[in-house]
Image 1 (tube, one colour):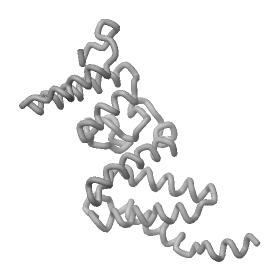
Image 2 (tube, rainbow, N blue to C red):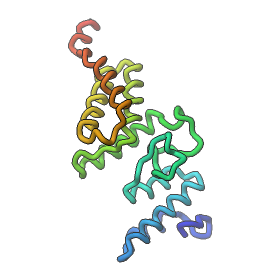
Image 3 (cartoon, rainbow, N blue to C red):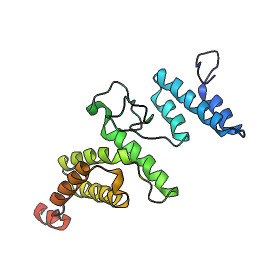
Image 4 (cartoon, one colour):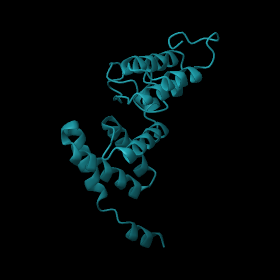
Length: 183
């Protein structure tokens, strides 16, 4: 039923619930079944259903540039990896959905962050600055810098330089002075 989704088998959700509730002494079989169900849903165009299955299996998030690779099943939540331009793929909504997942995981796993998401957060921070939200943009830069300090070997030097340069420009932002000019 996980590879042949059609009207004969009905809705996929009860099948997933049965797989999860009947965990056996073969966790690899359960994992392969859930990933196969996710792959079947993805082939039918059900992005949210497939990503839900992948999230159950502690997914490997992938970069947009690696989307044709087999490195991971999810780039950003709510958007399929295949046949998307970067602008269609890295929407603010998709970045924020993935950020919510990252935050939820960080509540149970200390210092948890998604490495590939940090590049998209940089895009979001630049968008926020364009929208006039300097403080929120600065907070994003501070968070990304904290992630880099925790595990610098996971990031390339070009990305670290971008964070440094952008953060350096934003460090002069002072919300108190901004309110004084608004009056």
